[in-house]
Length: 358
Image (cartoon, rainbow, N blue to C red):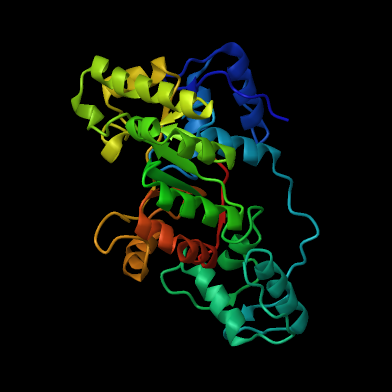
């Protein structure tokens, strides 16, 4: 098991020697030419972190935060076993493919590892199988052709260790825990799928509904900081930002007995690199990493929720981030979102995503 970090490593990190050695060790399991190990954070190490981040961040910052995305990606990559025993296909499968029976069965087996509703296995390439191939291809091809070629792009996507497209989504919900009825519905849906999510809650709502926050934590989800009153933190003084974040930390600790590790600023204000100076300073004081999102569902805009009217917009956002392996999806604790969440999760599965744990 990989040692956990006690502080950030890399550009502008706390860079404790033990943490630095841990990061060197992890990166060196992935590099063909290992880095020279040191107790200090060198320019070479920062460059190695940035190079690694190119695969999943649009703006690599050369820093690994405690429990942050780069840490999760790095530990998963370093500890991931190679996929063994995977049968190769001897010819193309799908629309216009050679469709040898043995190859078709291999492709069925691959899809049935990732689909919530397994396909009926056959020696024949059915329309249903071709459609499943196209659904996966939508995430990385502008013109899905419904065919898997030997060692082609679609085959490589399907056989990556993460399954499906090799991509995962982390579901996150802002502005809870109220309304609590919507929250309970969201939690029930997540439970049915075995999905764990992050909830960025408001301190004033925590104080009004402490039992709801306790329920979020009890069901195995992460409770994170979204400020106390939902102001634009980028427009506040450092003391005002500190008051908003510290008060929320205390409210969550009091209600659920957990301490948030992340802050998502309201409206995302100041939460994109380069971060707002006052926000970044207070976040460091409170041991919080700043976490915005990759995919904005805009579930609060009319028509509210995650229905068919939003899917094309959401899919375009995914297509613009094809190089990322894990994407944070922003939603809100709203009734319309609660009602649409089941269908949205099914859509994410059809697009080939697995679900990351926070």
